Image 1 (cartoon, helix red, strand yellow):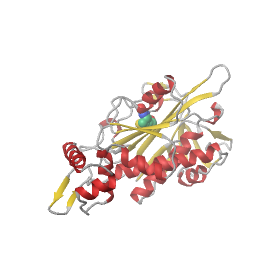
Image 2 (cartoon, helix red, strand yellow):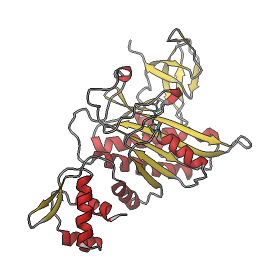
Image 3 (cartoon, protein in one colour):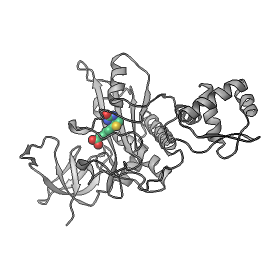
Image 4 (cartoon, protein in one colour):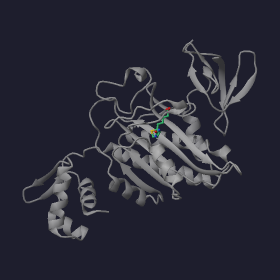
Length: 337
Ligand code: BTN
């Protein structure tokens, strides 16, 4: 970790308590000149570090950007063994990790970006990924599991994300099956899981679950095409203290522990997923993944009642004629009678 990162961490941990250059130099085991240099470069990056007369340095406001060192420390403290990379802007965090995997990277890792210029959504859609209001996170994983099990990592990620959102916001996060996180009736997050498998033996080479979270509403609101469905964790425009780092660290830690349990054969994420899945008992209409769209209108919209959910997170539905089946994918909407 660079001196600058360590200084930032120390200032962050001592918010509102100025620390002298001498104390910083002693605790970080470096010269006062290097502390001064680190403070200057933090100020140049936009951190409001004030020199308080005779007392030392204090960080007034976090810039609410992702700080690699801060997150790394929390991950190390929690024994999370994932490599971490923080990027300012990428085309797509999923694409970046797939590129790494295809170039032979075998480590499990997580990439966090503050902006995506070509963010991808499900079914070939794009995912609105602006800087400042959202956060975009992808994992590169190499689990030794059959291809058919890969979808569980999506549901596992959704459950971890709900817990992280609830921890930083003190508000309940719901799951709109299969994998949208919803607060106050609006989608605050989506997940796209991509994977590569060997054609020869059908084994999984790698999996990349990618999560986009709207932390705040963008100034001027969401773009026209998503404004009716998109929402954010926080509605007020006031920026929360260091929330981005806390949310990311909470999420990665929760994801990692669910993932470790999953590899050990324990589906601890399931209970958290099921209890937030708000469609159980509701009348829904849904589109199967292979539905056709004719004149902009989707064909074959089906209606059913959700009577349960199984351990694969498949929805158990009952049609009006009494026929029952399990749905493993598709897009649903809750019917308002
Ligand atoms: C959806 O709701 O349609 C899924 C959206 C998934 C967006 C995330 S953001 C991080 C990762 N990188 C991408 O390009 N997409 C996923």
